[in-house]
Image 1 (cartoon, rainbow, N blue to C red):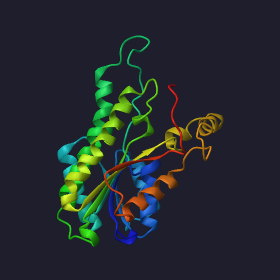
Image 2 (image 1 turned 30 degrees about the vertical axis):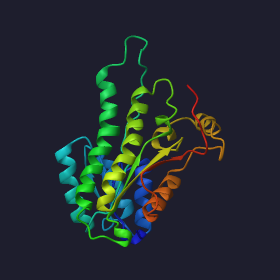
Image 3 (image 1 turned 90 degrees about the vertical axis):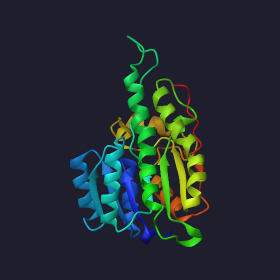
Length: 256
């Protein structure tokens, strides 16, 4: 798939990794629909990317009917839909046995609902539209890129809900890719390590440097532009399919 032919929806698209992806796709000649819940950031993102290249859609990724309707509207704006990149998510930190009481079940469920169910909801709605695209080279009709985390493999203390949700994203990658292969739709997941997201940027510089030094090489936090560059490579390379790829500088997280 050529960069200037990309017509993509990006969840979590108004900040952090999602906005970096949108910037990269637009810079390469593509068009994007930004799905998020921050209206102010959405307006800023569209202003930065250009109204001809991007449009913001307020979207709750856990709303089945709402996502389906939003993707149809996004497809109309984009003039097609051949890429879906899911970056929306929440951290959902909390210990199983907290200081005062066990973790509330609704907190665990909310993390899984947004990170896992939301990713599946967007993916299946996107695939439903992509399956009707005219096939390109190799019969390709679209690509879905989901975001997991190294926490899916080495979850730390306090990350039970987050790790479970991201582990689910990893787990559904291959079966989805196998099923959607018949429709010419690829599914790939990225498992990023420590990246300079808005949450990380809010930490003191000393804390950022300390976290970065935990990464074997390069010994720093990942840059959102590096994540975005990898998304572009996935979109362009048709042999990348059915796999979760770590983007982490070889880090393996410690228990705490």
